[in-house]
Image (cartoon, rainbow, N blue to C red; front, side, top):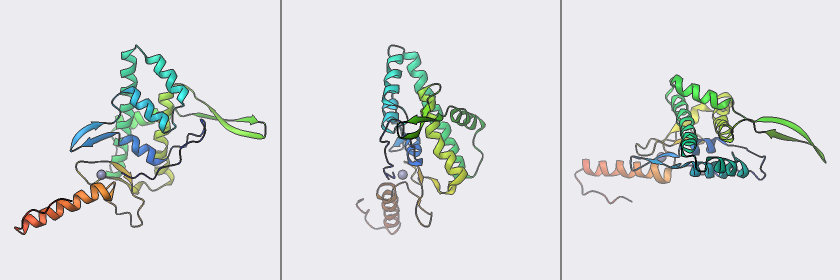
Length: 216
Ligand SMILES: [Zn+2]
């Protein structure tokens, strides 16, 4: 878990999404002790997460809540859409890591999500001109497009080779390896890295026939 705390938007119109936000989104499809752990269990949880990351306006989220209220079919369809794009993005990210082609269905889902991006336009302001955007279509589609953007940007002008999957079997988090040598294996040295080190230590002790070490 790399918490480099990207700058949060200070206004409603500054939706700057960082690659860390994208990976945090992918990692909401989490595991705990090797079992799947869904961090976006409800549409409400997903909307709160989107608002927190600045990819949906608070008002937009409230509007969606009002629309979905009392319509469980719409609510579950929206949640399924979010998870479908998330898993497609994860498939693309892991395909990059594995140097293989992603599944055509995942690629199709990501490409369709990308097309729902915002429309930017210049609008006059008392002291000159500023950038505004109209949200076209659905706020959830828009949020998903925003979250897909940094991955595409990394592929086109970044360091896709630094995208990694945590080496821990019980973690599998996607992370960006910003280390100098680009040889980081775990999402976080203090958790997954230490666990792996402790496991190797125990294995060595066992092999040496010594009493099992106390894990720290
Ligand atoms: Zn990890």
